[in-house]
Image (cartoon, rainbow, N blue to C red; front, side, top):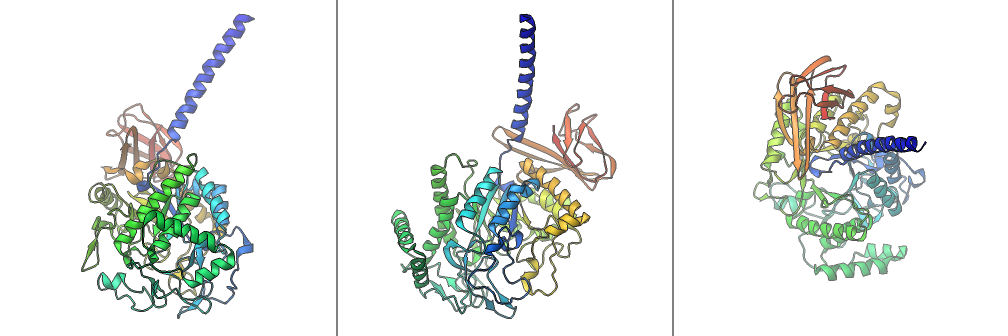
Length: 552
C-alpha cells in the first residue's frame, strides 16, 4: 500500500508539474506588453454610444426641440461601463477607449442656421471642474476607469483648452481678460489661426496671456451655490504655489484637466484644436500631465497598469503623416512632438486607405521607423467631424476596417466602424450625420452586421495580441499571393507574425520560409486552426481569404 501511495503521489506530482508548466506557458504568452504606438483605440461620443441610466437623460431644462441629431440622445458613462463589463471592447481587441469630453457643458442651446443645438458632443465647456450630469457623475467615471483597468483597457479623455462653450440666453460669457469674442480666424497664417475665434460665438481662451486673472464670476457664483467654492479655491492656491505659474487663464484650465488624472488615474488625453493654441501651451500641459500621472501612480502603486508614460495625442487639423514632425502654417513651421505630444491624429490615412495594402503598409512602416521614430500616428477612416471620410456610404466596410487595423501606427476605431453604423442620416445638417446612435439593434438582427463585427473582432484581437502589427516593422514576403510579416522587439520581448490578404478561399499556400522553420507549429487566428510548417510553406484550408499566422 505504501509503495502504491508513493507511486500515486509521484504520478500526481508529474501531472501537476506538467499542468503548471502549461499554465505558465499560457500565462507567459498572455503577457503581451501594451504599446501606445500600436494600440487599438476606440473613440466614441459618450452621448451616442449606450444609455445606461435613463434618469439622467434631461438636465438643466434642455427640452427645446432640436435639429436632427443635435440634442442629447441619452448615452452616458454608465452605458460605456456596461459594455466594458459585458466584454464588448475586449472581444473587439480594444485596449484603449477615448471618450468625448465629459466636463459640464453650457446649459442652453444655440441656433445658427442648423437648428437648435445642445452641447451633446462635449466640446462646449462651461465648468471644467464638474461632469455634465447628462453624461454621469464622478463616481460613474471612477467606476468606468476601474472597470476598464481590470480588463487591461486604458482610458483617454478629451481636453479642450482653446475655447469655452458658446454664449446663450442662459450661459454668460467668461470675462474679457479670459476670452476674446471677436476676431474670427481667417486661417491664412499662424496669427490668423491661433489668436482668434474658430467660429462666431465660440469665445477663444486667451491662452497667450500671462496676466493674472480672477476666477470668472459665473464659476464663483456656481461653486458657492454648490457648496464647494472654498475647496476649489484652496486647491487652486496650492497649485499655483507649487508650480509658480501666473494665474493666467490657460493654467487654471490645465490645473482643472490634470485633476482628472490625479483623481481617477486616466491614462491619456486627446487634445482638441491643437493648432489653434500656442505650441508652448501643450508643452506646459505635458509637464503637468506627467506630474499628475506620477502622483497618481505614487498614491496608487497597486493600480498602475504598467510603466508607460501618460499618453498625449493631438488633433492638429489637417496634419498629415507625410509631414513627419512638422506642421506648416504657411508662414511658420511648428513641431508639436517637441516635448508635447507622443502622437498626432493623421488626416492623411483616409486617402491612403484608397491605395493598395502594400503601398499603405510600406509607407507607414518607413515613416514611423525614420522621420517619426520614437513617436506615433493615430489613423482613422471615419470620425465625428470629417465630412469626407473613407467610404462614407459604408460600401466597403470590410476593406475599411481591415486596412485600419492592419496599418502600422495606432488605430482609431470610430464607434460603429466595426458594425457599419450609417454615416448618412436623412434630415441632418453638417456633422450631425456622422453622429447617429450606435447601431446595437443591427448587431442583434442583421446577419451582415454580425459577420462584419466578427471580422472586426478577429482582426482587433490579433492586433491587441501582437504589438508587431501596429508598432513593428513591415516587410512584404510575396506580392501574389499577398503575404507579409511584421516584427517587433523590445528588451527580451520579441513578436513576429505573418499575414496573408486577398487569398484564394479553400486551400492556400503561404511561403513562410524566411520567418519560420520547418516543423514549427503555427496558429491561424482567423480560421482558428493550427498548421505545421513544411518545406518552408504553411498550407491552410479555410473558407476565408485572410490568414493571420502566429507562433503556437
